Length: 427
RNA sequence: GUGGCCGUAGCUCAACAGGUAGAGCACCGGAUUGUGACUCCGGAGGUAGCGGGUUCAAGACCCGUCGGCCACCCCA
Image 1 (cartoon, rainbow, N blue to C red):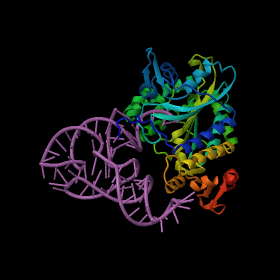
Image 2 (cartoon, rainbow, N blue to C red):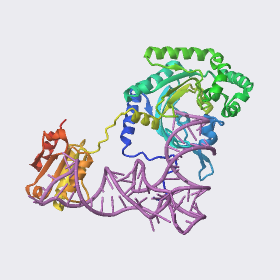
Image 3 (cartoon, rainbow, N blue to C red):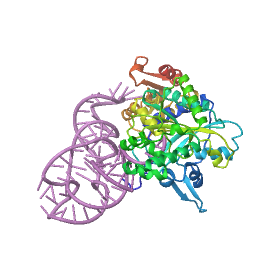
């Protein structure tokens, strides 16, 4: 094998897998369309400062996971590690925030991490962002939209919704201080990671996987008790709306998100079918981010879903996407036959643009070409040889069980190719 | 960044106190005239990830390195 291979964690998605991706992408686009969201296409590279200012300087993403480099002018650029920052930047820059906006985007994101199941360095997210609406009906819409998507994909049974409110900045600050003060007293008993996070990102300790740490937290201050009145009211309303819509959820008071810009409502759709990577879709409010990035104060909510993880879930659930690529395979032996086949099939493509017709290339015997026809998965073979050339005709042969009864094999004049083919392929 | 397991044909995998490699699938060809699938026969395909070391001899043992998978961390 050559020594020039793909970069670690940046995978090829092969023809075997793309039908599943296309099914997912089609469904996502259709659901978002059904709620009136507009697609926005964003650059993959942005100025490094954008991510530092939005995601947060002390997050793992910014500290050690970004693909950052200087361009030829010496300016620091970064391959986007997530989509919200760029979307907010575009919304501000393009003057889109004078009225509420519902937007979505899809594409590759980049994070320098060790690859494992459901995680790679180049991965794909579809993100949804809503600007200009501060009320919890907006939060509910996003969640209800997700639920519809899972239903359409057949994933309802394997994902579960967790929600929480992390309050406004003041409430979080107050809680953070109380939490740090409490944990300081139990420093010895905390796991090593949590000790480290105590100074960098104490809220993250809440979802530590260590049972000992969780036990300590049980007796500590809870975020809920520090929430501001508005956050509490909005959260209650969100629950009410979800109940009415029949969307089941679990209130997880220890749910916090890793990115600095979140406030108030946060949510996560999780699964237990993907090994260590439980989160399949997650988001929340970020009412302060637009202003923080230089726009006028604008409330916003959004979420992103991990496409690789959803593809894995679909596969795990046995969801089958139609993988066939060919309806008709054209066999032609001899140069006159090849010529007649080319002309005739081009004419068929003209009148039946929806038909997927693969013309054999590269010569070979009838036998070898028929093998290719069978392997292609086509339902029908069109056959040209010396006899057909002389007779100005074409042989049509069914290759599949069910179709065999309709027509096994027959030779018809060229003029009848179109009508005969349609009759054989009719559902 | 840390840890565990792994790296033999295109793919999935074997073998053997250490004696220079094999199967299945896939691929190509054939089983009398121009026809696929099932069957049968034949063929091609590997500098054993790479580099060192031990040995008369290494794919097998040791070291390093690169890569893969899974987990930690973190996140979608």
